[in-house]
Structures are given as structure tokens and as C-alpha cells.
Length: 107
Image (cartoon, rainbow, N blue to C red):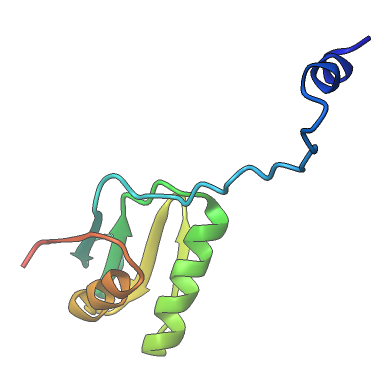
């Protein structure tokens, strides 16, 4: 006699129901840092977004959303999103609409 049978004997009127675990929504603890950088890139300006704590798939979806909204190029690797040009204000606005806290660094 297993535990389930014992519980049925104790509570005969109880109907067994399936239980679904609620999905935990990912919450970013630290703000995303938007930096402007030209060094090491042959003088070409880029905007770096650092400090993302989620999965690589989430990082790619954020990067794709920014790139398609602004119509510019970029990439993501090692937890950093690299967007071409100095677009910190626009990127910060997009990230805030997505529910992320942002912090502007430099200039």
C-alpha cells in the first residue's frame, strides 16, 4: 500500500487533481549597462549592452528586437550585445519598454 492509497483511505471524498507548477518569470536583478565604445574597433562607434543575467536564447531575442526595431546591425556573444553606432538613448528606451532597467555609461 503506497502513500496515495493511504490518503484515499483517509479522505474518501477527495478528488485527485493534476497540479501544474507555476512558471517563474525571469527577473533581471542588476540594470543592463549601455556603453559607447570606439577603442579597438578601428574608430568605428558601437554601443555595448552588458550585464544580462538570463539565457543565451533570451539574449538573442533581445538583440534581434533591438536590431530589427532600429534597422541596424549588431551581434551578441559572451553575454554582451554589440550594436553598430551610438544609439544608447534609443536602445535604452526599447529595453525599458521590454521591462528591463538600464544604466547609461560614458558621455
